[in-house]
Length: 406
Image (tube, rainbow, N blue to C red; front, side, top):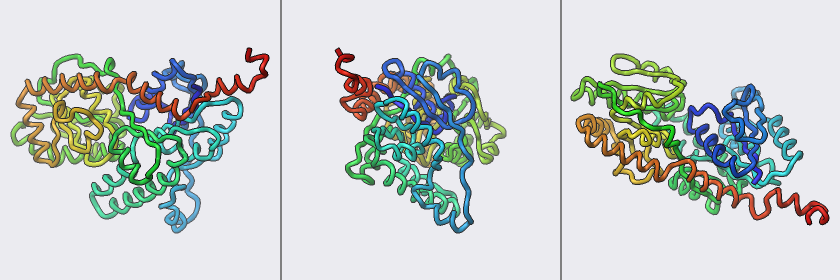
């Protein structure tokens, strides 16, 4: 197949789930298909992407328009068409690319790029949105810490719902990473064609070097500029960690991830380290006696848990953190509420054999169910279904003079 991938940022470096998703699937699929990339960003294509795509076009992202007064901006706040910026210059580049050569389909990486694919009705679109934004917005809204936060998130929830109702139906297939997100989308849009392909993990890369830190150590990792991660880190350190320290005062907490918010940076102090950006999370994960995932909002499969599993780490996670995962209960501990989380962590800190058992089960789960190669085969089947029975190469052959087809 000949595939044009649209992404709202360049899929490198691998510092968040969006880039992990697009890069690893591209790495698998490029050996069997011809991939081309149009991405929003700056500068030249990273060397790491060489060989993955036949062509790469990086389009500068324009400053987000802020035209009009306060009243007009308020009137647009709930508009589906205002949720994600539409840049006519980007659409023009996509249209010129499609005019130069035929493609089998558009692979749309993330909901933000649907603002362009909806305007190209001539080519089938695979909407690889990963998560249901409405489900995510609902959980974030009810996890708000105050009235103003609730109102902002209610606005985001309403505009996201309107966006999905308006923009998802044009896709031949919409892809998400959990069955829960699929069910939620079908409640909003009965009849929508939705596929489910779980996230993956590089089990060869994420391998433990062995051992734990000499001091009882907890690790939470993720992009700390992402609201659900930042709020989870603050909640755990302020509400749960003091309860753990009542019985295990030696415990040390590592909060690992780029772009920490001011609230996350403020957590740093005795027994709590906030790393900020790190080029490689594995040395930090390796120190963990327990990996914690205390999310209270969000959607989709959590790459951070897959990575911790692959590193043979015992995991304590909230119910919302384990959506879409298999064998939950056998390979990690689920706990909700600050006292329950503290008790689960303390149980693991006191029981090295249970930590070892959960770590080995987690690694086995990652290998059996979440390798990128197997996941790419599933995604590939969905892409082929969207492309249909006549790929571009065959179409070109049929359009050629009969003498050239002999």
